[in-house]
Amino acid sequence: MSRSVLVTGANRGIGLAIAAAFAEKGDKVALTYRTGEPPELKATGDGAILPVRCDITSTEDVERAFTEIEAAHGPVEILVANAGITRDTLVLRMTEQDFTDVLDTNLTGSFRVAKRAAKGMLRLRRGRLIFISSVVGLSGSPGQVNYAASKAGLVGMARSLAHELGSRSITANVVAPGFVQTAMTAELGEDRKKQILDAVPLGRYAQPEEIAGVVTFLASPEAAYITGAVVPVDGGLGMGH
Ligand code: NDP
Image 1 (tube, rainbow, N blue to C red):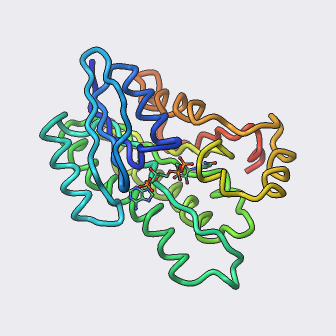
Image 2 (image 1 turned 180 degrees about the vertical axis):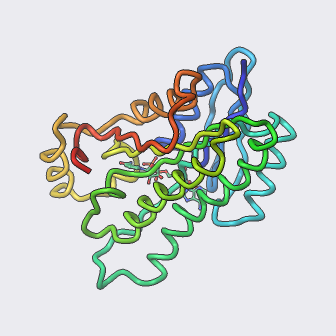
Image 3 (image 1 turned 135 degrees about the horizontal axis):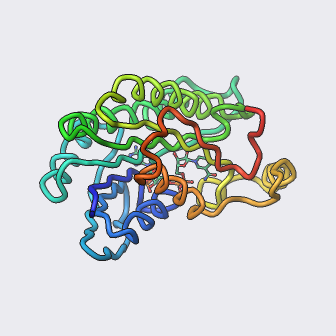
């Protein structure tokens, strides 16, 4: 059965790997991109690929994207709220704008798409909401007061959704990656990269495909009884949190 999947921020990095993993399974995958060109992904089997331009900080964009996706693929059955940004700096240098911009994308942006997806899922009486958080949402991290707050917020949001929507067979789960080899981590300085690798028991970064594998599992029939979970995919970095 080809399912209607939406992955936000899927023109690169982890989002692209997640979209590709669903496409490989023969799903109908809508993927949002905000800037540049949409990625080239091939559909398999009964699947289809629909790139949609969408900035998740705009409620109008989100509404337009869902209308387009529903017309092409039907109601979204699986939402992966992946789009996210960082604006790292130490707290005394962090402006209120740095804080609210990160919250508006990572947390409120995920709320915007989850709320809109829940509407269709409630009618369908099934659905999977999957939020891409981060190990630092639980452990905190210097220079990431804004980012860590946004990622911790996703946990409370997902668990509240799990309570609200569970009776309609809609699950809400969080994936908390550690450090993954993408443009986001390429920005880190060499000293910080070494510090991170020293702290990761597995001694390496994750590949985006390793996050995608956990996401597709949470969307699978085998995961139907998992809700409100926070699944770490962090090479052991967050153990104890
Ligand atoms: P990238 O920076 O490579 O990609 C981020 C994606 O989010 C891009 O597609 C970007 O679009 C999109 N995006 C950003 N802002 C918006 C917006 N306002 N509206 C729509 N799309 C937007 O990041 P990663 O792939 O590394 O990260 C993906 C997710 O995983 C993020 O939520 C991140 O916080 C999380 N994560 C990443 C980790 C890592 O080590 N890389 C670790 C833990 C969590 P555009 O190209 O247009 O900017």
